[in-house]
Amino acid sequence: MNGPALFDPGLQPERTLLAWRRTVLSLAVGSLVALRVLPSALGGWAVWPGLVGLVLSGALWGLATRRAETAYRALRDGSGLLPGGGQLLFLAAVVAAAGALGLLVVVL
Image 1 (cartoon, one colour):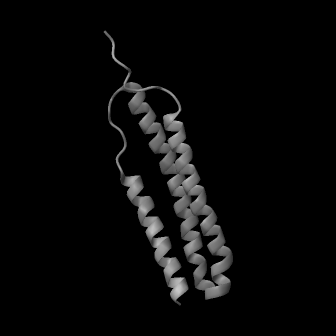
Image 2 (cartoon, helix red, strand yellow):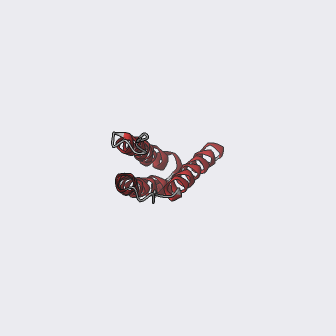
Image 3 (cartoon, rainbow, N blue to C red):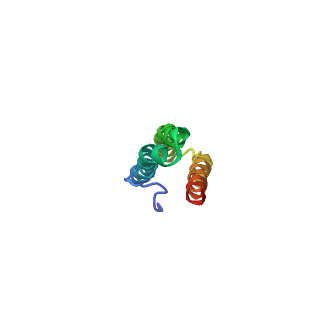
């Protein structure tokens, strides 16, 4: 008697990748807004947060793609070696830094 398959090769990995890409696009848009708004409000040094955000957006885009490919391969092959939570930690750190910068802008 066969039980249900542990992995349905449907669209779950693709939906997860799309969710990550939406998150990264939001970070990129926020960085572009920062590039437009912060220098006029705070001076020339304020271009750096926007540039750093754009670089981090590119890095997270690549990491999300690699993570999705790794997860799909692990599920397809049955190896069970799914990616860890490092990318989630990295994204949380980026969002926390952006929030701290926003708080700094409001306070100053």
